[in-house]
Image (cartoon, rainbow, N blue to C red; front, side, top):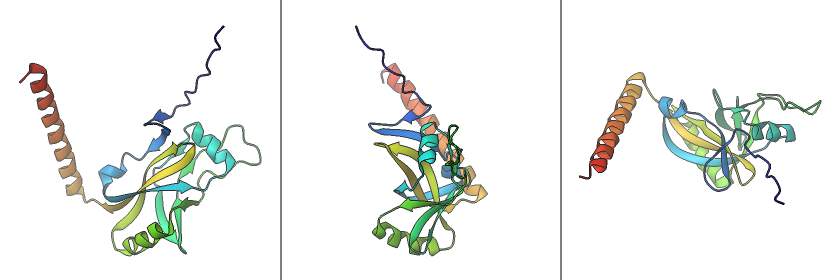
Length: 170
């Protein structure tokens, strides 16, 4: 007799082997030009990890900084764990990011430049470890946003036309 498998669907999107996305910051790629990306681990408490496994993270208004040689993330909202008691965490606390010293040393002078900031792009589990993808970003002006939107629409039209041509066989 075969055993029934437990459902592991917890609201997380699977993006490749061992990787499940908790949340993405879709507005970041619209509001900013992403110059470089970094992957960092997060220092979390137990109830924060459990809440993230339920898909309860939010990257809106979050940003990163380097303070006293430590990378930190501000305004990352992780809802309180439903079954947590007095051990529950504050939803918006400053969390430490785990980056290599060489990455921090490269980032520090770049963040000192005017107009550059560290923006979280996505929050995910990679082989069971909570990770955040950070982007070194420069803010876009309103006309730059319109140009980016027009370029994306043009690219989408080109893809559609190529798709139609491929279906017709020529």
